[in-house]
Image (tube, rainbow, N blue to C red):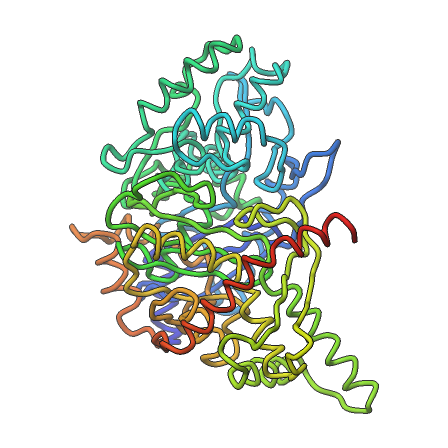
Length: 531
């Protein structure tokens, strides 16, 4: 890091700040003129279960933001001896979906209902049938329609809806806007018109009217903006709210608030058609940017957009590495009982590399990593399960390959819909998350699952706050380039990466495993009923 150059960037305001409200952490990342991080801040938080609703209070949200920003400002002052008073631009991101409903005086009508709440099954089903388009339970429109079906008492006072990112942006700027990627998780959007789908809005209004709700849905939703458009400036009151020390000046340009899915795409250079990214940790999801619409409705596939409005197919799975981690913990416990100490990194390296020695089809072993339900395969709840044929030797290599396969089993079921049923072309997927920490192993398994090259970048660990900062910088620095072009030339031109191509034998072996995985789902179903 060139300290003098960084100081000049900070003093001259040649920077961009991204703040992302994740489920367990609020993170701020400041980037300089070369688009690399120069300082960061964070605040840990947790959602609360209040009267059966997963929520964060307004005090949680605002206090968390202020703590995160103070942490960033302190790091800037400690590292560079500068008290920040301005930035070149700012962007806000947050966990997508959920329900934040306000009256005309901006009072929150009911506690914030986060994406985690699964209380809208009836609305989700009805709207999916009505639109011929998948509406997951976590989407804002599903929450609103469920309120309408239940005739909740706050609805007559409802003036506008937004998401967590949109709420923060409004507090800082006074503008009710969303980036199109975030908006696509509230209500379906039209990627040609780059705004909400008018035909579906009419259908919604007609259906809602039958239940006594007469407010046009488009009058309740925030304005839609695309990447690169100005979304207002930091107001005087917004600056004081963000920086309680009073050092930060107002008037800073702000880009459209985006969701964590969009910032993940940006942070992995996966915003162009035929590219995508896979985040694999406690849960796993894949985002694939389409070059043409899907031919039919698939309830297992969510449809959102990039921050520029290109359609994206999303495969979201609740379970990934938690059961794998539990087995690793068991092996560590045995090692300790035998008098050996082994650190986590070495343990995972041994187990992951051993998996590559296993038989390609796992040789008669099957496992399910379902600690919770799995939408892709139709489970409301789950039970971790391992089984084998009597003639299948209980070998460590085969066992670990089985655990890696099943970590991606539900994901592969969704990806197979895209690649085999819909023939969606994928030129490259970028992997990020704990599944890929052991060099090339997770990549090899995912390449077999997806049938596409898997790239892991040195920058992928910077996360969504960095992606949001890049969107803020793009707004002020673009000169006619698309977002994908600008990212390639300005953020990833020198990025170090490793790419693994799919191996034919691995892919065929995973396909054989998946035949058993799908065929034995009744066994998993029995486990949920009997255990």
